[in-house]
Image (cartoon, rainbow, N blue to C red; front, side, top):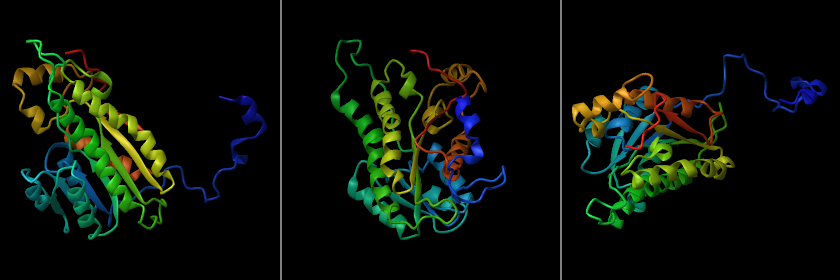
Length: 286
């Protein structure tokens, strides 16, 4: 990009950190083994798949979900020992703080994956000319955006007390969940798109805020995934949606979301980034 600079000062002379060089195929990675992870919305869908993947990697998982969820059954089904379900509303500071304390009692809390979220469609003005009820908009933003920030801030406060890991020097990693609706919001998705757009917008500031404490923050923006919410749609609707995904023309598998979350956790150079996971889908207006 700047040939004159490189010609005058080759890469070997640049002031890189003084740690020893590693083989090209090796890189520093945060090992989930022995770490404690909180997964919000972990009772089903993307969260359950992520909890499963983290448990298989040797992490102790605390599922944070609503009391009415299948959180207890999901926690009991995870491989390994020490996993737990903590019922909580992500918007409630006291309930979330209790879950964080329960997690730190199990070991160093180094991982947070925020998957909890809701979607209540509604047009700004309905067919009968009635404006969308403001509480309907506020509820979606409250759960998706404020809830994500609430869990993030309380978990980060616990993470800053961790000793840095010997392999990467990190104290923790936070993975939040937005949606491609943050960029391609459809008709009737004003509240959902606003909430997910907020998560996208706070990704870089969160990463910068927590950088001094060696805590990374990234966001995944999934497309159309095969989750319980999507399974409730009629078959003909699901077929049309799946066909609209360029490649592969299908719904995403929650395990694919979990695989990306794990890579973000393990790759110490991923920070402050929003990653679309959508098969190249760009949502039409409706």
